[in-house]
Structures are given as C-alpha cells and as structure tokens.
Length: 125
Image 1 (cartoon, one colour):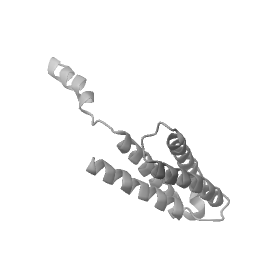
Image 2: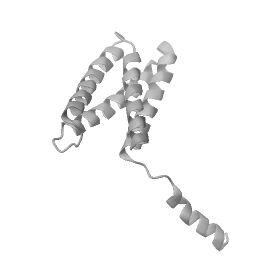
Image 3: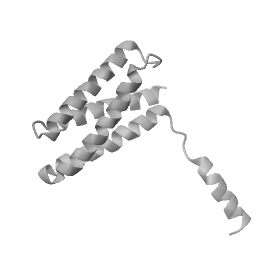
C-alpha cells in the first residue's frame, strides 16, 4: 500500500452519512416491517421467522413507549399519548398473532404509517 491508498482508507470512514435519530428510527422500523412482511408471505412455513420479527417489533415499541412516557420527552403530550396507545395495541395484537388468532397486517400497517411520518418529518426538517 502506498501513502495515497492509506490516506483514502483513513478518510473513507469519515465520509459515511450522519444519521439522525429519525433516520435511525426509520431504519429500525423498515428492517422489522420488511421481516414481518416476508415471513407473513410465507404462510405457515414462515411462522418462526414471523415470531422473531414480532418479538423485535415488540422491543422497538416498548422502547418507544418508555421514551414517550418520560416527562422530559419533547414531543407534544397528545402525540406522546397516541404513540403510547399504539405501543399498547401493538403488544396486544402481537399476542393474538402469536396465538394464531389474528394476522400481522395491522402491525405492518401501523409500522408503515410510522415510517411515512418519520420520512416526511425528515424531509420537512
């Protein structure tokens, strides 16, 4: 390796895009939602993968619920309450899906709506 190659590799990592909290949240929702969609499309053979994706989705929503329950959270109270309600609904509906008493479409739709909101907030910010 010559000096030019070493210099390029040293600065390459500094050129990676800066992630905002919103873009990080968006990516987490996108990854989990994609996994739920793929597993759901497989039907019964995808149930184990669906259960794993739902578990991760529950963890994500639990983190959001914890965040919006904090009095120091800067979001408006009404929005915080709606997010907390969605977290509760997601947890309950996840239980029904895992018991095979409901399908995961509501979870996928909620996540997709959140992703749209995060994307539009990122664009307008």
